[in-house]
Amino acid sequence: MIVMRDRTHITSIEKSLERYGPDVVAALDFATIRQMNKELHMGKTVQDLLVDVNRKFNAKELAVLAARFRMEMFDILHQRGTGHWGGAASAAELTTSLYFNRLNIDPSHPRWDDRDRFILSKGHASVNLYTILAHRGFFPVEDLPTFRTLGSHLQGHPAMNKTPGVDMSTGALGHGISIGLGMALAARLSNKDYWTYVLTGEGCLNEGQSWEALMCAAKYRPRGLVLMIDYNKVQLDGTENQIMPLEPLRDKLAAFGWHVCPKPLCGNDTSDIMDSFAWMDGDDVWPKAVIYDTTKGKGVSFTEGKNTWHGAVIDDKSFEAGIVELCDDLAKKEAAL
Image (cartoon, rainbow, N blue to C red; front, side, top):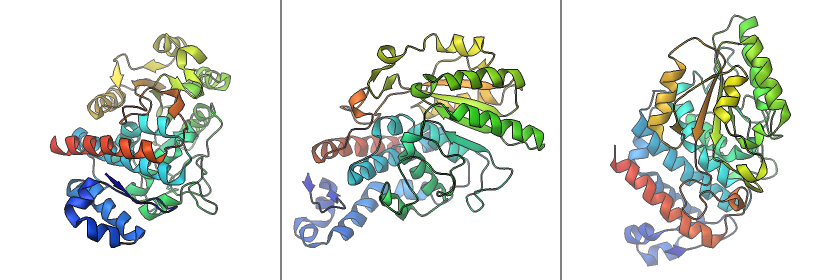
């Protein structure tokens, strides 16, 4: 593997050499090399899929997109030297499936009154949301490298007044369910049919405010309120069991009055996520909750399940090793189409 860098950090993998030759690659400026790598990484399959982002993608197509987006998240965080890889990676399939199969949205009108709402309660995973929003058409993909830079609309935590497509500013863990409940009740009061989806992690559920919101939602039972739990079982300082055990989580949610999906689901398997969407549509009992078992740092073997990769800097050595695994995963998923 050949790695060439300035501060914007340009990486060229072996395929670059095979396609262009070492003399050509060595002579090119960094911006050109990055564009070449984008074309290589994107691949014709992904480009073809993204020609029409407004259709409903199937499970295999979603798996390809999630793999591609996860790779882009890894690249962005490496360039910037800051951000949260672990929780962004664990939720790649969940957010991809929502935005490319489920949500009723219009990127050309981000504040459309009748749109479905999505709240990333675990706001530190913002690079995940930004990557999805950009490819869904809310703002140019070219903005993504400005992540966490001064003046950018893509700050470390989502800001609804700065970034098109962000429905709520988040960051302080535990606010998402309360806000989602408010949005769902607003739909009832205004006779709207939109749904509100809240994505949390364990950290959100460590907060007392979350459980107050769970109780309140069970009292008022607003239609369209869905809690999606990215249950990767690892937090900043250790595992869930070390920090604050949540089990038996499904029983607790049910005891608090929520309609909980009874089926064990893998949140890194798009087929399972499609099954969960079918379950959501199967009855009119509210509010609903789905627990998705996921893997922290998914896609890179040495980051998976490691609390140290919650927000660690992706250094050059880690990037060189990790990007190869992510490229291989994308290739396998493309081959499965």
